[in-house]
Image (cartoon, rainbow, N blue to C red):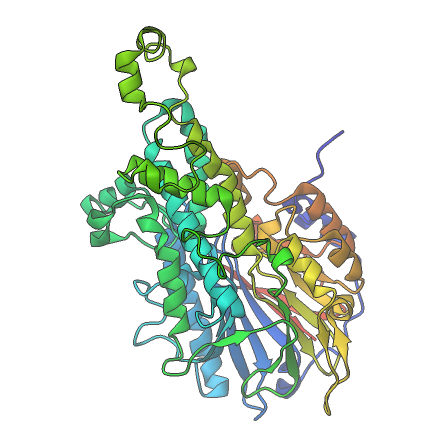
Amino acid sequence: MSKPARPDELSSPQDATAVEKLPILDVPTKVEEKLKGIELVLFCHGLGDCHLLGFPAANGKGRVWMMIDCGLHGSTKGGRERMDALFAAIRKHLAKESMLSGTGDLAVVALTHEHWDHNSGFHPRQTLFDANGPKVGEVWMAWTEDTKDPLGRELDKYKGAAVKVIANSHARIENVAALLPIRNAWEAMLGFYGAISYESAAAAVKSSDDMGDGGGAIDELAVKVESFALKGEVSRIARDAAAQLAHPKLPRFLEPGDVLAIPGVDGVRCYVLAPPRDRKMLGLLDSKADTFGAAGTGNATLDALANALAVQGGMSLDEDETGPFDASEGLPLTKAIGEVSFLRDHYLDQPQRTIDHDWLMGASDLALQLDAKTNNTSLVLAFEIIETGHVLLFAADAQVGNWKSWMTVKFPATSDRSATTGARLLERAVFYKVGHHGSRNATLREGLEKMTALEVAFNPTDEKMAQKVGWNDIPATALNAELYRRTKGRLIQSDQRWIADRSRPIPIAEGGALVSIRRGEGPSLKLHIL
């Protein structure tokens, strides 16, 4: 069976005429009509999310702009240059828009979750939001990032502890040749947290070579690195910096079921679909908040690895409550080799027999859990254009539990709107920002089947980079094929050649809710949707 074509092949210039032409809805001709609907600026800078949304200003003067995420994965080659180009494009776009609206600021910045490919642009060492950058009116974040929320604190503790355990496990196998593939896999995963190795960081101090950290070298901080990933704090620093962008105004922590007005905008509503409050949907099934046991995370793999690493660092076995045996049982390996002749004669000289590092393999499962659980805390937003009823869905990196929760979210009627549900909003979705760069478990089949009105899908990804680090299902071939079928060929993948190469025709047909599509700086695509 032949492999289905990738989007670059499916929507190549020579196939453009084969895409079904849809009737254009009330094509705007006057300046004021061009301000109807929503204008999207979708940046195509690599495996990372950064989107600008422009809404018609209530005062009739241009558009009010909002940003959703700003980041790039830590494994991206030339990350510093890509982010600099992204920042320049954002500033240029907002400066141009200020000629109409009188301001080049952002009414809202929404940060969907704590991953570097979504938040590296907010790190305080970046330049976008310096003294000369755009001012921010409000910051929106998920309730999971609220330090005053008990479950939010529990999630935060789990994420921080897990990153440190994986980072320390990585350091333990740094020089074990047989475990190189596993080490590389962990390294790629930790790229979602802005992670870099000590060696890479130190090299960045000594030379100007790009280390592909998705947002610039760590510079003098490198010499202070004690373990891989700066102990997992880099992405968290970026998240906390984003929370301060509207200082002294505190972030708005959003819950599923919230309906928000964008400041200065009348014609668009924003519905919050996720993250869910349901522990099962989030993937957290335990809590130690009401017990007097050892301070832990409620995750057996994480607690066992954390304690084992602590024992390696000097903690007494008597203090390890997760250990399977009493501290008085057995011998340390170094002592056993000296006392047991069989081990001395047949263990050290036969590497295939050794199991010294096997206990660290639990970090592989932990890495997958951490990635999925962080993604499941994604803030998911649906924007409704009131005049047409069309919905634009931004799913961040939501995975199965997050998606399933949308189906039961309810939005009660008020004096100015009818009651609706998450499922009904999906039925009216004409635009879908594809979840988690197109991975197979980040678009729920049931959810996609409800999108019967879907016209355009956009996937911010980098297929070559993903394959280089072993993510062979980013993007998933079967998902791409289904999105292409449902959108009648209007699936856009951000690494397609025609986006940056202006000599190539744009292979996406205008029509229906898509009034226009054009290329912008960054590179980027500008879509006008009614």
